Image (cartoon, rainbow, N blue to C red; front, top):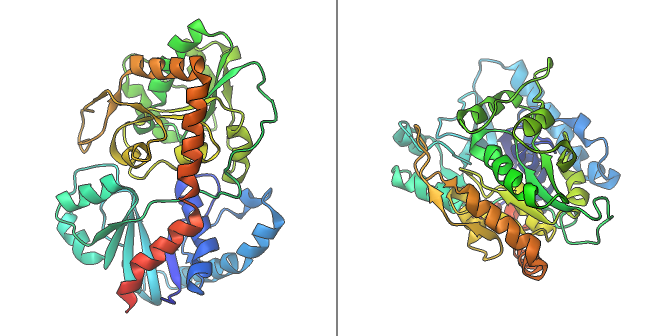
Length: 387
């Protein structure tokens, strides 16, 4: 199928949807021979340190995206019909924006909230909905949405792969936690588990990449009564280190990495001994966890929602004790047991050979999920719609 594609989300190396958009722009032309453009913001400033050859490859897609955005802005309030594919992002089951439609209009779903009052209308609004995890497809089908197919996101094996360490944390046992700060991601549980683990292991250090363009959603973590609340700087950013120290983590056992673009993360990840992801819900498979695994870092993951696709590879340490999460739209979410998290950290610390095997298995599993492969699968999944 040779169909040009417009996707209705941004391009940036600083957050998950943006990384997806970046790789659509890179790989859709390779698998289809036609361009892929973003209809919304492209964060070109965040590309400043990227490989110049990769930037050169993106130049046409960036220019086409700028033209696309200018045309949409110039016709504000008017309907635009694009002769190709339009993909709309869906964090909830929502109806598409009617200003821009395609000859083929589809959704890409990383849905977290499980209440879906508009399921019937959404089913009819899209030619196909691409689910970012097996759990998301099951969730949609359970709500009567049958025009759905699963295509998992990918990793860039040129960036994320096993390689020698630089030794920046030599002598420490480094535990990594990544993902934007919010209740769904479970950073409160990470702090509780690491606090207990660190009391027995003074060489342990928690390394976090929790920044995001949406710091305001971090207040959802204050729902845990076992935690001291977050505090914010005057510019609205979270005082991450202050929050960790207030909750019992010694300052010399905590590193906040700040905001790091995706293309610079691999060098950090390869310094880690284990990664911890007790996420309560993932609509997709958790891109950060996938990138850790691709680098050969043994990952501890919760056995719920989109993480089940990672568990199915057999590679991670698995958090099996999952309790229901109360609240609207949280069916299927899981609350990981802090004691089990500490047990998994202890195993990774005490049995380095077993941890290494988990890391090797994760790298092998993720090598089959390259962005090139996954965008090719997306192309093949959409192809029948253009027949």
